[in-house]
Structures are given as structure tokens and as C-alpha cells.
Length: 341
Image (cartoon, rainbow, N blue to C red):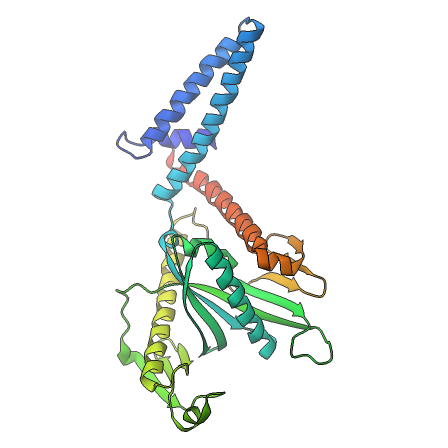
């Protein structure tokens, strides 16, 4: 790996931002070679100990500089568009399991909301909506690198427990999906002529007003078939505006994923984002354990793991380490194709 990295750096023009990294590494390597030569001669005990310590110190500096150079190279030439996304929408949708699945999704939304706040991210715009694929909870999170931090948690989560609504103590199995969507930039346009609106009475609690007025709004984007129903507000106009906003977010997500796929196909070193169709984790409350299926990792003391954030800290760190290792391996292979020996 080091030989490939040095060979590539040596090819770069002096004006390259990475040329200074190469100079530092070659200077340190030269010093290390000189010390090796000295250590191969006859030395007194004190001199030998001195140069051995120098050898260890410079070797550690070279290792640190190697890592810094790899990080710089990733930032300069292999950085992904998603690394610069500082505002995301987190969506939690109930899956298999009926009402219990939606309750699980709501609970997980609150758990992730608290976790992201504890990490210094700002949370806003929390609400529940009816989408084309069922009920969901959502909130926005803002902060530097929030997308690249939390994206590895997206996917299908499974819970095994006795629901609060269960009167006979039976254990149920339910799922919910967690999606992390990049927030829509201001310059992303939506042609409202492509939208079809339907108005209806809101469902559920809300009193006489809810029952007698058609304030709920369903918006459907004809070209894509995307649909969302909003009944948060008593005002039909406000629900209509929110429906348009959510359709706009969904369309941007499709465009974003298209660009990501195009970039992935062009660059061998691209590490793909988490596939939300895969089950990533199972929370087994009767056995007080959680299993992350991607990592083959099982942890115990579920309540404590949730409250401390240790569960997410551990999984996010391990997934990010594995993705970085995969990115470096693919990057080195990519560099080999550019080097003429």
C-alpha cells in the first residue's frame, strides 16, 4: 500500500496540494534509512539505545504521515458528494406488524432524535404524516457532516417484544424502516403543474372541525406516482403547502440517488450508501439483546445501550471503519491503474 501511495504522489506536479505530503514522507524515510545504516555499525550501549529510540520515533511519524496523506487524498480526489450534506430528513415508517410497527417507528424516532441532539446536531420540524406507503414519523437534523454520520443507521430495524397494547403477554415481531434523506437545496425546482390534489376530511381525533371540513390534502406527482397525504393542520392551505414540500423532498432524493449511482459506476473506489431494503438490526427485548446483522455483533442490556447511546456509537464507528477500509483498498487498486512502473 505504501509503495503504491508513494509512487502515485511522486507522479503529481509540484503545484499539487499533496506534493508537500510527499516531501515530508520522503524526508522522514531518508532519516530512517540513515539511522538504519548507523544501527548496522558497532555502537556503544548508550548510542545504540539512542538511535533505536530515534528509529521508533521516526517510524511512528511516518505511519502518522501515511494516514494523514491517505485522508488528504480521499478528501482531495475521492470525496463523495454526500460528505458535504449538512442537513437531512430522518423518516421512520412502520413496516410488518400493524399498529405495533408504527409505535415502534415512533419510539425509534424519539430515540434517534435524542441521540443526534446528544451529538450536537440541531433537530427541528418533527411530525407524523400519512405517505403513499403508510404512516411515518419524521424530523430534520442539521449540523456538519450529519448525513455521512447517520446514513449507516438507515435500513430495516426489527423488534421482538410484548407490545404495550398486548393483554395476553404474547410476544410480537415487528419492523420499521429508517430512511436518511438529504434536505432539498433551495435551487431544486418542482413543477406544480405535475401535481394533482385531492381534499378530504381528516381522520382520527380532532373534534368537530376535523369531522366537518375537508382540510386534509393528498398530493400526487403524476410523472413519478409519488403521493403523500397531510392532515396536520386545520388549514387546507397549510396542509397543501406541506404536501408539496414533502413531494419536493422525495423527488430530490430520487435525483440524488441517481447522481450517486452514476458516480458509483464511474468510480471503482466509490463506497455505496446503506441499502434501506436490508435488515440491519434486531432488538430482542425478551432476551435483552440486540444483534447488528451487518457486523455480526451482539450486545446485551438493551435499555442501558439506548439510554447511553453506546449502541449507536459502537455500530456507527465499526461501520465507518469498515467503509473507510473498503474505500482505501479500492482507492489503492484505482491508483495502481494510474501508475506506470
